[in-house]
Image 1: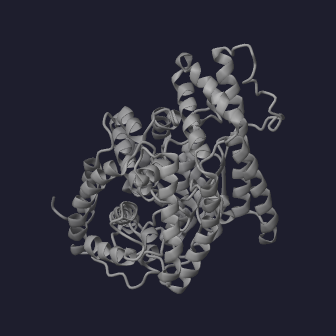
Image 2: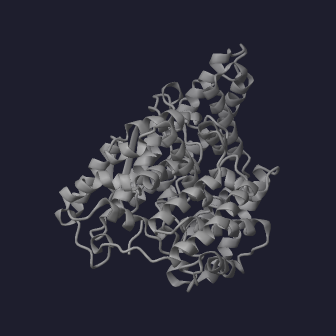
Image 3: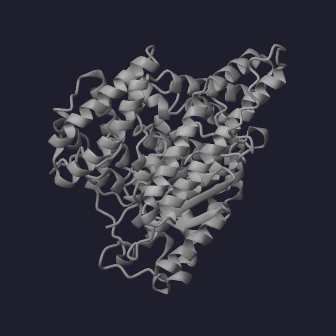
Length: 558
């Protein structure tokens, strides 16, 4: 039986800090861009050595010009990456790799130049007279500049080498179910990340520094507090739900050989219609993995289609539309191309996609709206009611594989990875006993026996791609989405009725005014959450939502 899969596999690794060509195409997913200026390489604006003191507006203006040109270069990289994954023929891979490597070198030089450092310093000296958004851009420019320039050259070279070596070793080990061949490389990667933290941010715990790359302002201690509450509530709830009589799913919606064939071109037309009704007017294409790319003024999304499972294509489309709307509606005008116009964190970006996928797309109201459109496209579904789609999409079934997990069990997959990462960085877990600890936690939390390392600790590419601290963003995103949607319902009294009628305008407006348009104004996601909902991220809201939804779905008395 099918279930909605967590969007967020390979294509969500867009901010992994690695120089590997293999992942170059995904790094730029969340970047925005301004129009490339003719003087992008001229440096003629560099006036830090002028004898006349710059005025307040001059200092920030000059910094803004430099940052916008760098952002425009990043935008070029993003478009190249999108083209590589969607349109480009395989025979062009070599030349594209060379193009992107050359561009990456130019961007790195601009991001670490003495010129940029002096421009940041000049703006900082005049910071008191700037507005809130301008100050946020100066703050983030400093943070990024320091991270890049404090990284020792020998560690940067090692990072580039291990990025390529790690991916290749992981791919081969996974194919052959041979963890021992990957173990020495993984040990080097963990040590690299520890050494990096010590060099760049010695005041932070090494794992805190890794988490901060994706969830700035977040620490392992705060995550442990959040995840402990989630785990304590979820483990018994999952046991309760999986012990109840299971949902019966119509064969037309169950996927697999018994399902009818859903014409892919008709699926694409349906998804295009849904995308427009949700309010996104950008580009939609097909790809192996759904993802969001392009630039803030040219956002592009993709999804994939399964002839036996049309719902997976719709779900991917809804998820990426959530990302795309966030991309399109972050701070623009004078702030376009500035640090404040970028996503606050991976968790917040994921919350915007999961709010649409989970809170909207997995609701019965949404399928009340969509069911007639599906019947128009596929007449053999005409007898299916909205409730049958709702049951099929929300069926709970334990899974070994994270990306195949349902909404209810998915957080435990993330918590397991968080606890393992924490152990690798504090020394309580080593690469030698990592598989055993993985298997132990899967048995303890999900009651699942792990038959092989291929289906266990080798299933994800994140660690091989040097990304530690990334996994928590997926479940933080789901929790933020729940808390934001709850508050949106209070602000829009008839929101669920509007969704059932295919009207998403008020929800889009609320999101744009309260979240999208804030960009990176706040120093952390918790602070944004508090500004929007009146409190920091609260795991009880998420748990209450899951208990109420799934007990009702499985007809269990509260």
